Image (cartoon, rainbow, N blue to C red):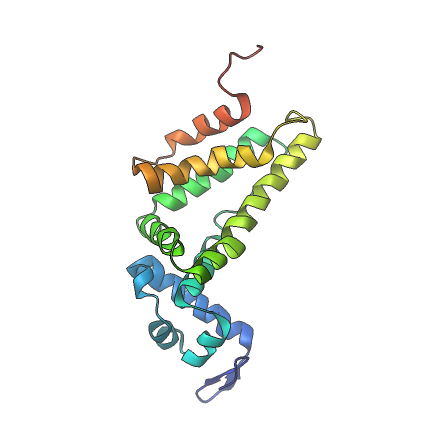
Length: 201
């Protein structure tokens, strides 16, 4: 079985893109239903109808596969709007992120992925390259556009703003393990945009 094709009974070989998409769907389903430990090459290959050897060639570890599957599953949910209203866009995107994390089948697997990444270099690399850094760059790009339009100070630190917004959610979810709900979204956005000093100071 080659890495670019796999056998489809009675219909020849499937294109590599179709095989990969099917594997990612199967891996995401397993991850969200049963957690990261259930994501094994054996189980994913069986549920995707793919060759286990293909999975070994495409991903360095089941953890790396799980990370990419999560990214593929969450990509459309976490798109970043640009309506021209920075505050509204930040509230919309951060609200989508919080609602996604509050889903019963999402918060626990995300915690497991980040935890496992501390001891799995392949997973850590996949999480960073396939999810964390691209998501961060989307946010910085939106903030930079607002900065160029005069909606943010020229000296505003955009990377720190991203840390303030999304980092606070991860901190609550993973470190403090306190409630994370949509009521925090507007407060986080206003704190990042306006700070703690009296307005007009």
